[in-house]
Amino acid sequence: MLLALSTLGCPELSLAEAATLSGGQGYSGLELRSGPDATVSTAAPEAARRRWRRALDDAGVQALSIASYVKLCDVNLDDDAVVEAGRAEVRLAHDLAAPWVRVFPGGTRGVPVSTAVEERAARRLAAIVASSEGLGVQVALETHDSHPTAVDVLRLLGAEGCESVAVIWDALHTWLGGESPEDTARLLEGRLAYLQVKDVVSADDLAPLPLGEGVLPLHECLALVRDRALTEWVSWEYERAWHPEAPSLGVLGGAGCRWVTNALAPPA
Image (cartoon, rainbow, N blue to C red):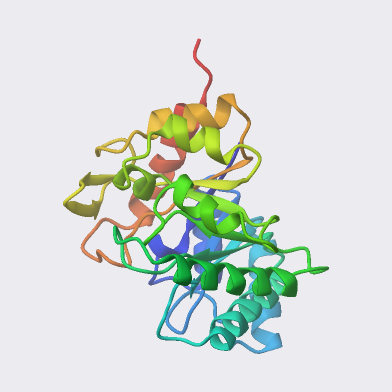
C-alpha cells in the first residue's frame, strides 16, 4: 500500500519543504491543506501552481488530495458561495494532479443536522461534483463534524448527483461516533478514497500522539483495509497545527512510516 502525510502535521513548512520531508521519510503522497493560511490556496496564481507541481515532482511525491475546508452543512453561507468554493478547490486539485478533493460535512461535532440541512448539503455536493467532470478529480467526503460515521456520510451520498463521491475514513471520528471499524469497512467497501490514521490520548483529550501510543483501534482499521483491499492509500493526519507543542514530523515522520508499514504487514 502507499503511504501519505497530511501537511496538517507540518504547518510551518512550505509545500516544497513538506514534499522533501515526506519523500525522504518513505511517504509517497501528501494531503495538501488548502486555505488562506495553509500549504496551498485557491487564490494562488498559475505560476505558483506550476512551482508547487514541480516541487512535488522533484521530491517524487504525489499530491494525494486537496484537503479543503468546504463545509456542506454551513448554514451561514449561501449555496452559491459553498459551491463556488468547492469548484475552486477542484480546479486546484486538477492543477496539482491530485486525484481527490476533500470536503467536510460541516455542522457541529456530535450534533445531528435537520433533514432540510442535509438535503441542502447534498444539493451543494452534487453541484460541486458536476464541476469536476472531465478534470480527473473526484470529490471525497470525510467522516467528520455532524456526520462522523460511515452511516452518517452515506445518507448524504445517497442523493442524486452524489453517486461518484468517495469517502475519506477518518479513524478518529468514526471511533468518536461509536461505529466499529468492522461496520465502517463494510459500509465503505467500493467507496473508500483512503484511510486517515492518527492517535490520541482519549476521547476527552485529542492531543496527537505517535501512532500506536494512543487509544484508537488502528491495527484493526489497517487490517480491514488490507485484507479487503479497500484502498491503495493510508494517510497519517498528525494534528500538530492545532497542537504546536507536539513533536515535529521531522522527529516522528520516519517512525510513523515504519509503524504503518509494520501494521499493514500480513500476519505470519
